[in-house]
Image (cartoon, rainbow, N blue to C red; front, top):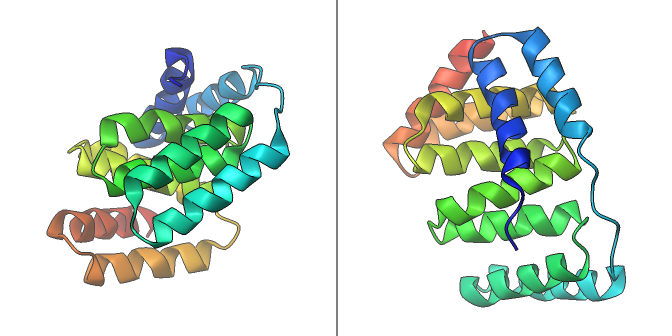
Length: 179
């Protein structure tokens, strides 16, 4: 399942608007994204069962099976934002960013204010070397965060404790932008 490139264009228009600090363009891009009709909900019971199996496999670090279960779940219910986000996360854990990014975009399309999807997109962009977009995506995540103080604490922790230096530096840049 690959999403319409139009969804990614709109998601990245939001990122670009945030990067250039153009709040008018950001609002327009979000409106355009929200205007794309979302899919009808499918077999929720089957989808949630596949999601639960995927989460179990994810916790066991059986990532390829987790990806398969999340794909099954998303096929059963293409409108399930949690499954789209979980699929993207599992792909990113496998360093398959090219595949993860469209599913983060899908999750964002389904729920444009979903902080975890924006943060996950930021991580995938950072792992892909798209640094300016990474900072902007984190800033969008912060914008939609229901608990901005907690988000800021997470970024502060990342700026000191992240596994790789690039993640630490990017978190520091985001914090600088927020000050």
